[in-house]
Image (cartoon, rainbow, N blue to C red):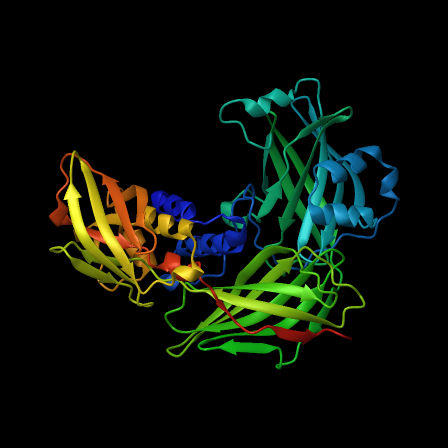
Length: 469
């Protein structure tokens, strides 16, 4: 994987309030390009257990609660102050299991204090006690941001689950923290235990091992008929099933897109019968891909951290699709010259190219771009994300993944300080800092036209889905 490329794609995300969902879409697409499979399609590998983003699947459940946990002051604090929304909701419903499992290493006690499960999310809380620890250790150089580190199972990166970690907080009873995980698949047995090993606590190295028992139960799953489909052009979405949890909702659906849409991403908003929009948690997890010469059909799953009311007899799905394409690469020519998007018809007209004091400046206009659907930030982002690529490293007709995997460390030169010269005329400028041995004839332009299409999604007609039982 190319670290510089990933960081560049990450920085391309737009974050004004009204564009936040589109930004998440762009980030998801960047992540897909980091996989190693041809044409980007892959059943997602789990990110590091310390990552903040979750890839969610179902299959876990804890045994019923044995005590009224509202009487436990420490758990009240944990779920009120540092836990995650699903955990807090389940705690308030008395659907959290109290635990008291302790491991000791190097004078530090770690105790698992509670656990919860809903639909696809598994959470735990824990307490740390020792007179050798200080919360100031989190501020030390190279220390874990959360104040602790851990691994699941045998520690192999491929076996880790995605998850979120709270920072440790100090209380009168010790330091407390919370973690939330997602199971990688649905193949666990009835008497499954989650192995977790803490390896450092506030700068203190050690080994604190636990096997947390987890039992399955059957979730309420509603199968949907074939009428819950909406189509627009070459894009369609069909709702397959809905799984109702105590604090979450899962939708499974199938999306269809054209053969050149392997980088396209569907997003959905869900509104219940009372008009309330469900809160998004993880949208568009790829379960499987069926690719032919006519279409790409993807089975997907989305998690919402909102519970459907028992009185709801329908929901309304609002789908949209953000289209993307790999950057267009073209060698420099005598100005003026044009660079055209391979998929969307956008055109960049390069009017002037100048090199002055090791700085390359490219002056250009954009054509066939709908300004009404885009923000100023989208154009600034485009100007900053144009790159120079060494021409000898360009692979003709390669897909994006193959091209990036072939790049050497010094293949790309990234732009900086992009400018909008005239918004109405779509007159922009990009600049590049150069090395002393730079030769313009040895480089091509790498133009990210996909920024425009990704931030102007196609909206499909809403579809009403009957969920009455």
